[in-house]
Length: 350
Figure 1 (cartoon, rainbow, N blue to C red):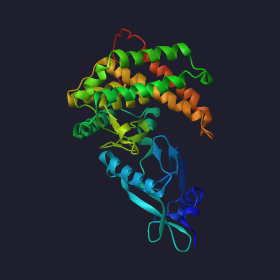
Figure 2: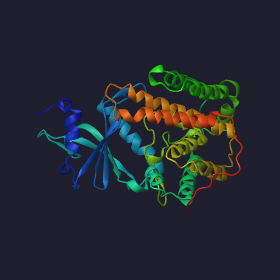
Figure 3: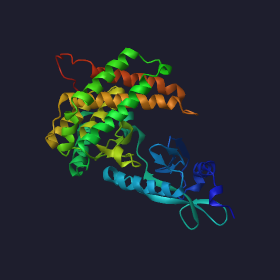
Figure 4: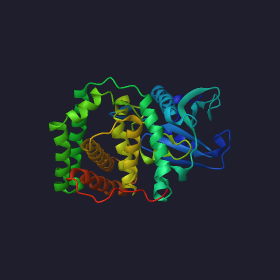
């Protein structure tokens, strides 16, 4: 009898790449690898398999840990995509030594099962296709504003909230200043000085947000590729493995989503998101707070892009340095003194 431990990740991926492995018999299966998972697009369904990896912020090396994370992913994502997350199923090793999804046998792993969303209606694809209108973004913003309104304020000390930014930004500076990446040292210094000034001299901007009960358990990874435009829109793939990273200011999350939309060429989206949130919540943040979050998030995303280059076997190695440079450009725009503007950005289509 085959032992559970003898079933390798390669065995599981090979099984899940085969259309015959699925009860609904999809015509084909497309497998996509991420840093922490394998994702299998099987007809109208998606199956996600966690990889047995360990990082500083998670440990998926045991089957029990992967099962727990699958169940957390389903639970947390049902907050904004209830109809999309269909359940969690075991990947079973039968007494005959064959793998199957569900049924009797010994679990060798666990799968998150989702309904498949239309690729062309994901916000990143829609932006690139020029197929996003004001009504789409208003709908997304309204959905998120209602989500934040329902969320309970986090039990978090103001000093701890600021300390986390200080710690992470120290890492940002260390990586972005590494001569190996040959980024513009003057630009990095200007950007870092702007963020450091807020953290050292104007930290009350952040502490007051905690004291006002604005920090909540949010999505944690609010990017355009996780937003599906529809009626209503759905938001998937929240950061399920670390609650601390989900404790965010809605202004931070919405600014982050706006930053990523700007990177794709839709800079008009960020102001709409913040305006609609303020309309619903009465929470209109200071401009310096928005600039801080944009600049900090851009630095963080640049750092994470560069870290990929240092991996032993980086996926798409040609992608990361240009992406990091683009984030630095976006960060610099917020670190520079504000320029007078004759007119606001207006979204071009209805």
